[in-house]
Amino acid sequence: MYSIGEFIVHPGQGVCKVEGVVEEPIAVYQLTPIGQRHPMRISFPLASEDKLRPVLTRDEAMEIIDQYPSMQLDDYVGRSNALEEEHFRHKIRNGSCRDSVRIVKTFRHRIAETRARNKKPPVVYERILKQASDRSLEELAIALDSTPDGVRMLFEQEIDASQN
Image (tube, rainbow, N blue to C red; front, side):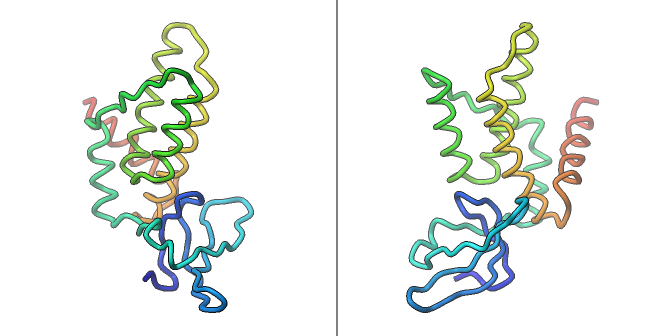
């Protein structure tokens, strides 16, 4: 069971803060999503607690950032953009923060490759990139007691260091 004040990752809402636990009529967590413009408190049944996961530790977050330059791209290719989007959305919702960071790297690469061929990348690429980026930056920011912009700078520093 998660404690009041603890940060957890909800599959649909991303990082949430546990605000309370209500026992009646059924046991539910009262969660407030972090990083949304107009966050609304949501209820999540304790019976489905296995779908929630704790936020990364500081060490795990730093390990992901340190490994980013050497992280492998995700090689999944669907028969259509819609199938790819479904696959990656599922991975963002149900995977780890590392999965989301890997998706960010994959779609940055795919977008750059497309632009290098003087083509416009599919809108779905931008959408997947934004979802994965928002989800991973939120979680890493909480783990590192930072902001999403601060985490973005850490990634940039790591990339620069690996290129030199």
